Amino acid sequence: MHTSRQPRAIVLVLDSVGCGALPDAAEYGDEGSNTLGNTARVAGGLDMPNLGAMGLGSITDVLGVPPVADVSASWGRNAEASAGKDTTTGHWEMMGMRLSRAFPTYPDGFPASVMDAWTQETGLGWLGNYAASGTEIIQRLGDEHVASGSPIVYTSADSVFQIAAHEDVVPVEELYRLCSIARTRVCVGEHAVGRIIARPFIGPNADGVYTRTHRRRDFALEPPEPTVLDRLNRAGIQCYGIGKIGEIFAWRGICESPHSTDNMNGFDHLVERVASDAPGFVFANLVDFDMVWGHRNDVEGYARGLEAVDARIPELLEVMEDGDLLIITADHGCDPTMPSTDHSREYTPLIAKVKGVDAGVALGTRATFGDIGETVLDFYGHAGECGRGTSFLKEVRDAG
Image 1 (spheres, rainbow, N blue to C red):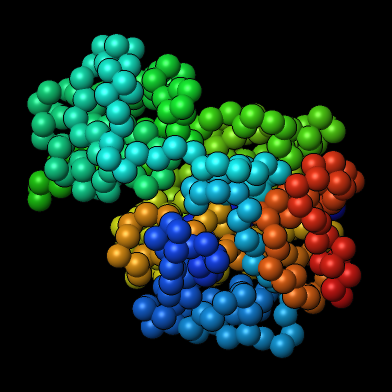
Image 2 (image 1 turned 30 degrees about the vertical axis):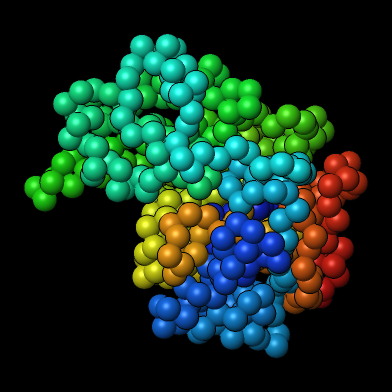
């Protein structure tokens, strides 16, 4: 165990692991969503003893994870104050931003002005231009794309402009370049979507199926105002991302953010960073819950993924120093039991633990994801500098 560094804060985002429909969920078509609770119910129960001991079963009804009397961490849930239910909005709100108007979405595809700009700026044609599941659209248009070389452009219920291309037709670095063009010269002004997403794929295999690869990359808008990450940086505190964190914040305020091939690889990076002697804030995202299972309505995969992360929680706690703060949460929902394959407007779970404090308290329903960022600032001695949330650090520290 290391003893030379200063205590650090760690935020672990289980991407899309929501815990119940928000009061306005019906306005988004998400009434009845509960990613965590519904997944547990349909899967026949979850085996999550470690997060269970930290209070997970007290946040929402989770079959197989009952509430426990002697919790080892504090627990609650977060309400999203911003409009929307996407990755960028959720992460930005955690770090002190609040959007009063959701990013634009295009359920009927992008208008002619956007696609004309695409052709003018890239010199390329396109296939698709409608809302679709990413795995389905590459099966539908993959052969035509390979034959024509025209990238597949599509969107979803989220604010995204997605570009899919076969790695042997459009090399990955070229795909990234096209996404940069879309970010800076195509999806601009009123059409400035939250993210441009590169979706490389390979195949077909012997069964004629195309498969997306792990070299996805997100090109997000740059936050329009300082975030918690910016404030920490100005105070001389380095911020380490893991997974797509760097991309979500357009690499502002993040000194590194190693790409993760899957959840377990991302957890490897997390443990390695926390075990190091380098001080600073660690901000990790595990994306498989959303990208691999949630959007594909794969309840069984989602359930096993939750159990796999739970099994590694002791490993993370072991490499933490006494005084370190761990916050486990999510950025939105993506209930795999619902008919939709899109994100869902949900509360997100909140588990918070200071190592060395082996008890917890109920943190209640937080009014904004921004309470997380405010707590991180408080941890580093900069309480109240953002003003977009309420710190719960004292409750967590005093729980013992």
